[in-house]
Image (cartoon, rainbow, N blue to C red; front, side, top):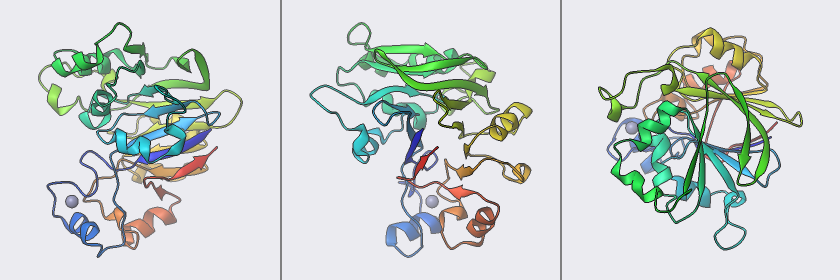
Length: 274
Ligand SMILES: [Zn+2]
């Protein structure tokens, strides 16, 4: 399995447009050892030809352009087979609206996340201009399914894991909180090319979350590290990093501490092969 980090920052990116914290100011002025980051999104592929995006960030156009494997190979073509959503937060969904150029797209999400993005959203009509413009495939908690692109299997299987979290800010008070609001992925290469645990917004490490992390070759994670000592995964990578986080500074003591514990800090362009 090939993995490419397209964006590694939390919502708002780094630097964030309205933030003048020491991190954001420092990275703008080039006075700290840190690199700018776009909002969280990761591309994965079993064969290097057909790709799947984990989340669709507001910076999706720039992120696709930043990675030649995602460039079209002909007129009206895209190597992006489908997009998987971890939740209905705007920084994970807004990019879908940017893929409106009359191109059929396939989205994997829980029913709760699909409703959170489509219902009462007049802008969604831009993705309903012709029948079949968007095809939704339901991710049921715990059920493992094959990932397919348009007309062909992707060589990957995915299982959705409930992850404690909150409904998106714009849906607060509109929808009842549900376990399907926020999920992580366990993704397996069917030819034995590794297991990825993708957990980019963990409010609390449950037994199920811990189990998925234990069985993975590579873990992407955002949440409390304190309870994760001794995790066996070969690659352990922090993602969805907030602009104020001292970990963004490559020479900070906080960075040294997590690295000493075997964790890497994701950056845009990081590639992992399992
Ligand atoms: Zn900041």
